[in-house]
Length: 218
Image 1 (cartoon, rainbow, N blue to C red):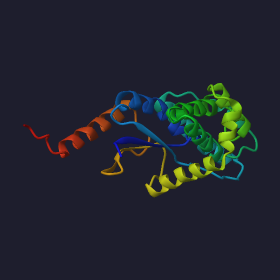
Image 2: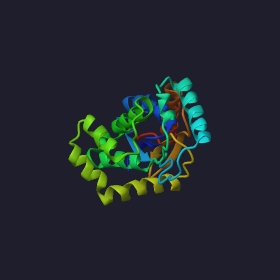
Image 3: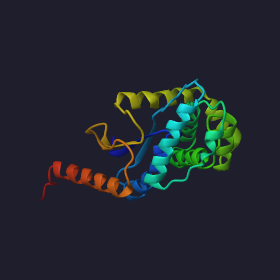
Image 4: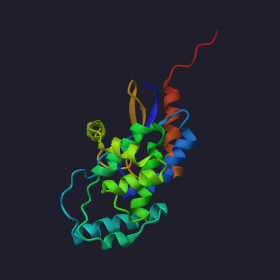
């Protein structure tokens, strides 16, 4: 398999929303040599508990830190919601449905869900909201709904979660560089600015090139 950047993320991870401009810049700068492969990490899939005040306070603090570090916008009216269950499974499944419909648009759709949830206070745990967001994105609503409901989409989402666990990913965002044949190196296990990530990827490419034997000359 050719070398790639592997991006582990979740649509309801605030640090991933902060990282959104960074992964876009990485794709623009390095995507021809290192295509980005998106893996849905599964931050809190299947959560059943309603958010209490302590959970709201903890998440609000995360949002404050992300906004300060990245400048990304947040709608704090979210914390006025009552009875919200922070189940990230449906949103992850929606991104996988998009990936199955159009692999090249999965990363952009992840950003679309991030923006809807964090900046627009839309409920991306809700199937109908997700279908409406897909329609906003330019998809046929019925086609997206069928893909979302397909059992294979659910199984592929679970496979993404399993890949994340096997890779030892403990937080999002995480960015790796490498290939299945030669292995992967961690670029960043968490949020970093684009300037830092650009330097890290460039350094990885330089180490890779240095480790390879020089091309033979005739």
